[in-house]
Amino acid sequence: MIYQNDDPRALYAMERARTGNYGADYDDGAEYVCPVCGALEPEHYYLDDDEECIGCSECVHKTDFLYWT
Image 1 (cartoon, rainbow, N blue to C red):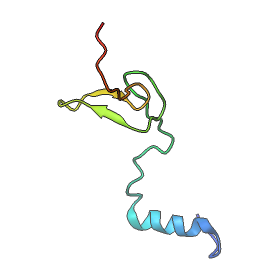
Image 2 (cartoon, helix red, strand yellow; image 1 turned 180 degrees about the vertical axis):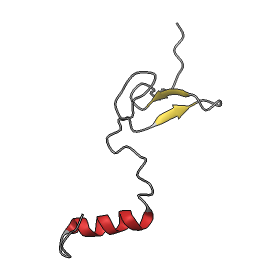
Image 3 (cartoon, rainbow, N blue to C red; image 1 turned 90 degrees about the horizontal axis):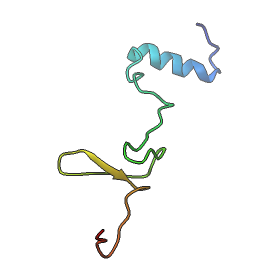
Image 4 (cartoon, rainbow, N blue to C red; image 1 turned 30 degrees about the horizontal axis):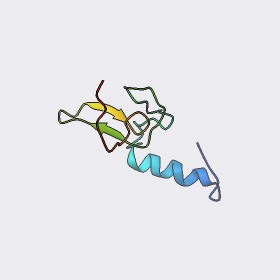
């Protein structure tokens, strides 16, 4: 495609051609969901020692004492 020199898409087209579209394998519209509670795009995820998710900032809370059931 041919762009005018003052078109903002011209720079993007030149960089894409120069780099071979390197780094375009990511998804801008990806939504990150907590696997425990299903919260959309939480601030933080918490992992255990085995690198498995145990919750997020929406479903894990800090407390001063332990609840026993």
